[in-house]
Image (cartoon, rainbow, N blue to C red; front, side):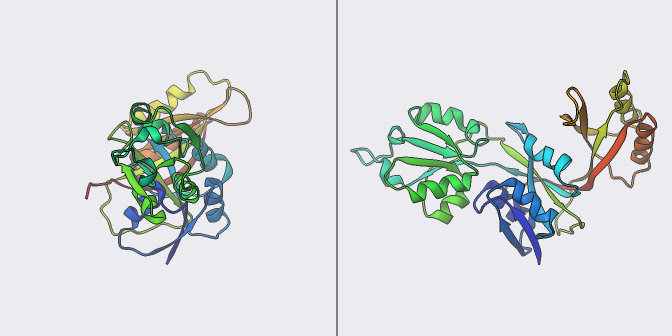
Length: 290
């Protein structure tokens, strides 16, 4: 059975992994910190790790990208997209007014992950502007803290799965500002993974480091892809952490490394004096509403 490291039970990572594996069994190792998720697979304690890398609203998850680039050398084995559906969770009876109705103005504090809180600003400003906002390690941890502190007027923004796990109420569902809030996840590990599901497309992720003092180097790199009609779905600069103003370029190409065209593009880029590091060539899966 596959052993998979991921963030705590009840997080979007947990929901997303359940979707990816479907009916296939797996053993989940849950960690509070994303650094421990990475280290689990790096040390051989798990076969794979679940890493959120990009969100519709907040863009790239820089910390996680830097871990993939600088801290570990573990290839991406697949990618999938999953909706980040957040809900307001608490003990509903704490927030009933004299008429027996839920009154969000009675909430004193709302806790969640620092990425989730900004995604729900419109709801918070409209219904609970008085609430203190507090960031914690994960959405699941926020629900756990609320559960351990009854009677304080605290609520959490988290998943339906977390509410069920801790026996709390969904006081408001889908409280994110945008309905199209999706997160892109990658599964990293040293061995390819075979899943019984339809592949949407193949993608190759590559890190390119330009030579110093080479005017027009990035233009020539992009031209190597462009004239071969290789489609790039993402390009992002990340600091090399070696010298101010020096950057790697993270690029996603919608092509397999088996492609002669992609291999030729890499050869041309290396001939320019650039370093090319393939982070993975893998299948991608798209979420379909059930």
